[in-house]
Image 1 (cartoon, helix red, strand yellow):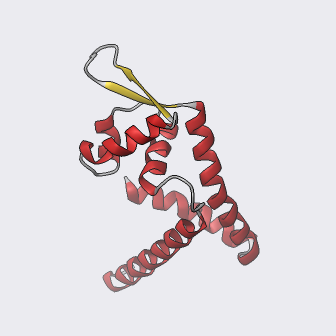
Image 2 (image 1 turned 90 degrees about the vertical axis):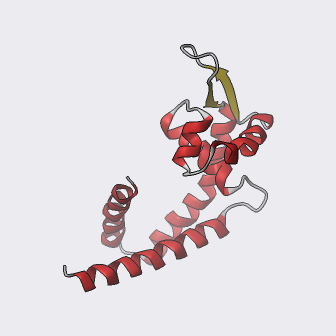
Length: 142
């Protein structure tokens, strides 16, 4: 693939992913958690206990930028903080059962919409191609 084809592919991919992200955002429950809160819960679900600094780094934010959201999640009982065993100054943040349930409930709505859209608009072969593409997109994020 030459440079011009790569650039055209990059443009098409950017447009498609932005459009899909916008549509998925529209499918989220209006009364649910915000984007950052969902993302923080998702990191905790996938990676296990993390510090506020690690969560901020995962979001490419400063730690103080996630403080308010973490406080709200803790107040709602969706996360729990505990002191580190090796360094008592560090707090490890873990997802609670209620946090897991809230995350599952909220992303379940968008996942259901997307699964129905895939089934209704694409062939099984096209769905398999998207499964491969999803793996490739994960590699681009690293």
